Amino acid sequence: MAQGAFQLAREGLRYRGREGQWSWLLHRVTGIGVFLFLALHIVDIFLMSFGEEVFNELLFIYKQPWARIGHIFLFFGVLFHALNGIRVTILDFWPSAWRYQRQAVWVQVVIFLILFVPSALAIIMSMLS
Image 1 (cartoon, helix red, strand yellow):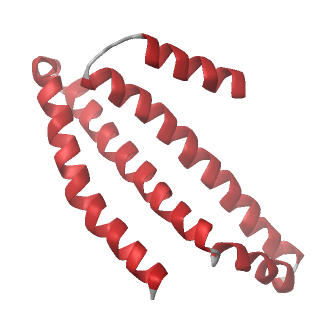
Image 2 (cartoon, rainbow, N blue to C red):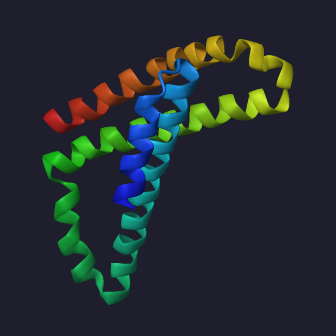
């Protein structure tokens, strides 16, 4: 899997595409990240079958500062992946809109920043308090 990720990054960086190409690459990376988080979450919930004590012992991990920073990365991945998926779906349903693909990426970036920045700041503020 690591070799596949390395090849994906190498191929993505080799082609000097514009916004659509970078959006494509980031969509793949965030998809892998969200999948890995879901796998961890399933294992975490599975531990409940071994008793509440085992599950509660694992909860200390989520209270660590690096795990809280991980929440910001998780939110970044989920939000970007969702907005990019919506953009691609809209463009797929209306093929004539592909002429505006570049502008659609920038609209997506603006929407992403409007949603991500205040939310990330709220996560950081909750970490500091």
